[in-house]
Image 1 (cartoon, one colour):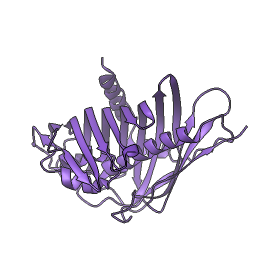
Image 2 (cartoon, helix red, strand yellow; image 1 turned 45 degrees about the horizontal axis):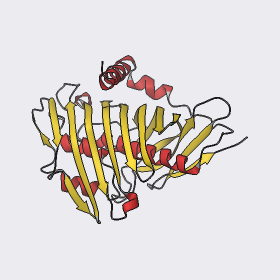
Image 3 (cartoon, rainbow, N blue to C red; image 1 turned 30 degrees about the vertical axis):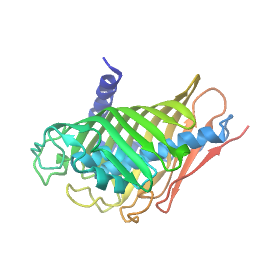
Image 4 (tube, rainbow, N blue to C red; image 1 turned 30 degrees about the horizontal axis):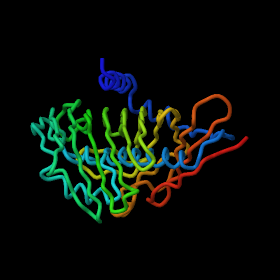
Length: 311
């Protein structure tokens, strides 16, 4: 069995084994911050924190993604505004091979989206972004509207590659991902399983990244998640791991939500994120004291990335 198939089976089993409400309850407790940390360079912390921030933003975006192009384009990080890229690339890129949508929720029953050049190339603010590869998108939940359970997807990414030739050469990068993004929804919230093997090439060299985590979104008290309606304000909690391999150096981090992420659709359209506040830690695994990459979100901006250290 391939790594992708194995991950897909494992994550699908996880989603089936745990109910959304149970997971929301189990993950509602804050995680205490470690008190000390071994050596973790500032450069390593910024690399890990920056990548994790991008994945969190994609996770937030995919909760509200509707239709074929919107989902995959959440995973096109660029120096330019992602929304501008989506507007430029969404038509005629990607080209789905099937548009049948039995429950009319914007997710096709089963379709392969092909990203190819030149149609999947855009230029904005001096940066050229190219997207290639494919995404197999399936609707795992069939029920007629207005049942919110009609919304769900299973997306399998295959050599999904984003190349950015930036106006500032040092900021150019290429990112290739293989893996799955799986989301199911109820009125109480969403459960998202996120499992990717990622190769990132930038000015620092080549890094191989493996992400395995789940994210839980719950609307604020008194509101519910309704198919076709605007996303209500709510809180996102995530847990899992991320592994980095750069050359002979490998590091594994445990991801934990210290303060739930306050997802606010009312954040300005031009804001860096839809996160009003919250804190996530990535703790370096290993013997002895822990090193922690700390991401603190505030006022819909990019998170502040620091390290927690001690003796």
